[in-house]
Image 1: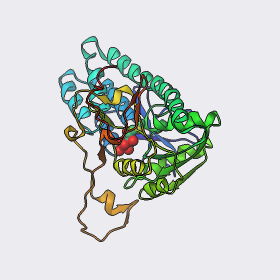
Image 2: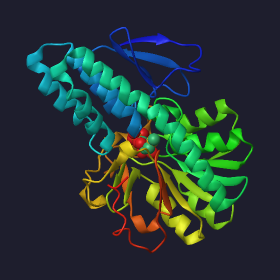
Image 3: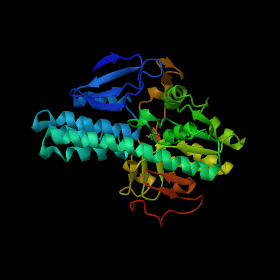
Image 4: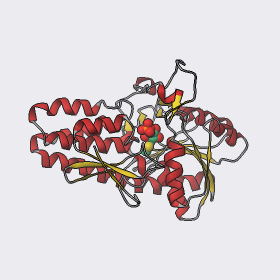
Length: 345
Ligand code: MRU
């Protein structure tokens, strides 16, 4: 992996193809260091995905597709194994396996066709962000009125997609039109995507926000400081269950208790009609060291046993609405989604 220092990443897509390499913003280095990584082998792409140098459901899908483009330029005999390794690099977000399969399907037409398909997937995610921003902003205004105070979790901005974002794209759209009351970003332990990445994006965009510990979210809602929760998804199941960053479920319970909308913003590329419920999703368990320490500093006694699920499942009956790039799926608290199959778009 060769890295290039960059004084400003303004305008830089999170994932792109350039000069026979996958170029990503190195999210492990943010917010302290802004740098790009040039990934020139499938192994480097897999490693970047697993280390969360590139992360967020749409972004890992695009990175995986470009990884297939790298594989297609290599020996034909190793293509199938490379594709399989890419598609299982992380198990929970449906975007990865789906985008890898889509790019790989073009292999018979040659490496150029594979790359063209990967570029199409990237372009579709950019267009999706714009559509979600529009639909989501309209929904927030409809449900909460003007100048809503929102709480978000993890990072759903440009860094989780290509440019734009999912839930954070809605926040940016409301801010741009003067219709945002403020944002609380929850820090998102253990890897601090909220503190490191969302705070970085919101700060650069000049959006007024506060950072809060994850556990503060439900209390801020109870105290009347939040009008709606808005966040993303790694997989939306056929029954409307939402699989997203660990901590999402706690915010959903808090929102239900406080009686405020719980809104999920995710592109159709994250909606998975083939997975019936959240119980059917493989939840990634990550290294215990992520919980017992941070940045090389131990925060727990040596040898402490750990639970480190990277994602959780929010049952559909806690979800007020799911905004995709094509539709707003309205669910309401306590009402089963069984009659609204997500496969029909
Ligand atoms: O482990 P991560 O950082 O890849 O998890 C990301 C999330 O959970 C996001 O909320 C989700 O991918 C939606 S982002 C558009």
